[in-house]
Image (tube, rainbow, N blue to C red; front, top):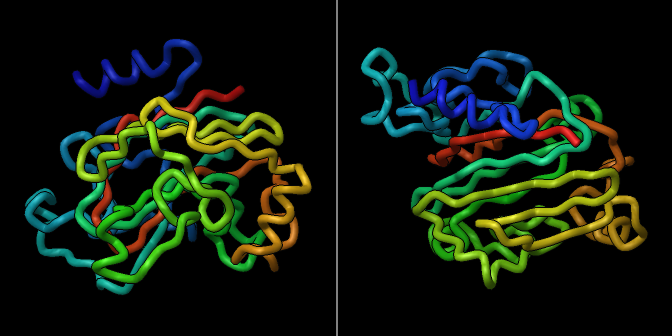
Length: 231
């Protein structure tokens, strides 16, 4: 009943759910394969990456993914101009991300594309390695930092993410606050790419469309209420 209500609300105003609240229907591994529940599961209406064994249904509770093995989850469909909304929550030290303009086979790796970074800003660096300002939550990963001063980011509570793509204009929003904006067809964007890890990926940021992807870093990250509106 809850899933049906969510879908009814989502479909109003042109919004369509990317997650039905019950299954991973419409999602596949970035390699085109179905993913084991040890990597991605639906637990109590939430998509969970690397779910804790205690939270998994009994029939999959004895399945454990290797700690150093990661597999990304992407939509079967592709999208061009859109608004994407999702809620996310982190565990201490966790790292994830929402990627878009994903075209496996187009660049050096299948998961290369724009990324709305999702990470425990304060604790990740203490537990793993230091991150810089273009690697913090809501940043356009490795390209442009997010100004989260007024966004009230709470890593261990539910946060609202929104991505807007309208032609060249790209916006990242966090908890109702726009935290960055860039024109991906501008010279200033091209300079950011030249100085980033994507400098050797010809055509990066210029594609017309691509898949939406949830990134797996071997951490437990929670996602719900994932909706898209094509514009």
